[in-house]
Length: 67
Image (cartoon, rainbow, N blue to C red; front, top):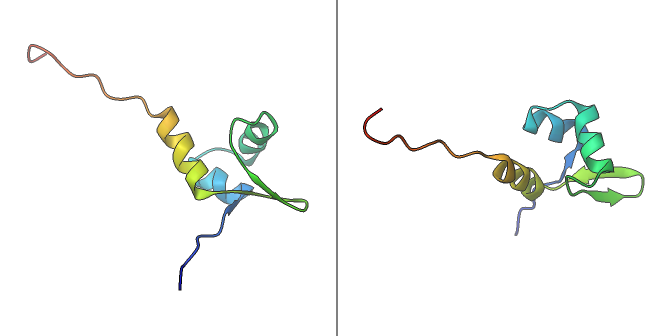
């Protein structure tokens, strides 16, 4: 039997991202983060949390000449 991970509530997504609920709601309104609407409820898939983290990750600089 396949186990599915339930999409996150806005408050859970905010906690996972370390953001405020208001910020996540603003991102939803501006379509900066993808979401699923189930009637009046809004849920955010785990894959979308991962995408946001990946898109916002800034790689470390590689030091040259041992400095």
